[in-house]
Image (cartoon, rainbow, N blue to C red; front, side, top):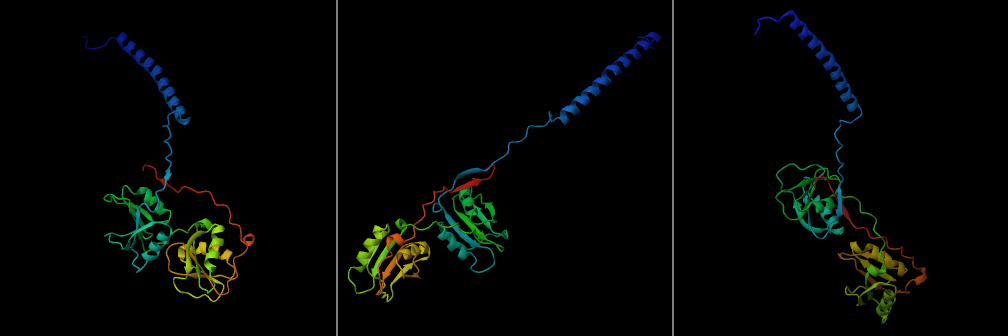
Length: 284
């Protein structure tokens, strides 16, 4: 191999380099411009990710799982009213007491549940806005804990209750007078108006009503009692400690009979039934 290149070889090599530069440099420019244009027009962007939407499913029945209410607020008795109100709203109640978790609780409160209790916890969350959801991996039943924190704001307002209907009211009619068959005849009229027949007798509590009538009811029967009152002019309402929604009509010494049927307010049509649902978050 010669130690040095001839003058002719040197010239040939220079020409090849010039040709390479002439061809390669414009190609690089064209390629760069193409990539830039494609990027500017969005051709090289990744396809957009699919938007995740919550999965809406039918909610579990309120009586199908246990709801515990635990106090972590530092205030005595803070959990009691919440426990009672959830029972009025149809939830199956469990433990009422102080929180035993050895950790700080979110001030707004917590909703604790296990892997099998997500839907149940989501249903409770509708009643307890602002409380933090906390999954307990070692809980294998569907029970849910409502933990009352220091800044617990209370339960969500109850939705308006539909008006009571005669077919929903279990009515007891008691005669507190010495007039015979007064309770029997009054019950016959009330059942003809759609009320459900309950007891018919003298008052088991041995009350003597000197006025027109008294309508006894418990907290869960307020709307039922007011419906009965529309049929009994002059009757007074009396709250007692019963837990069901039944109503007692006590006929008094000044009894004057029922309101004529055509003067009783018409009960509005029954609203359509809505199936309760919960929305499972993305990824659940």
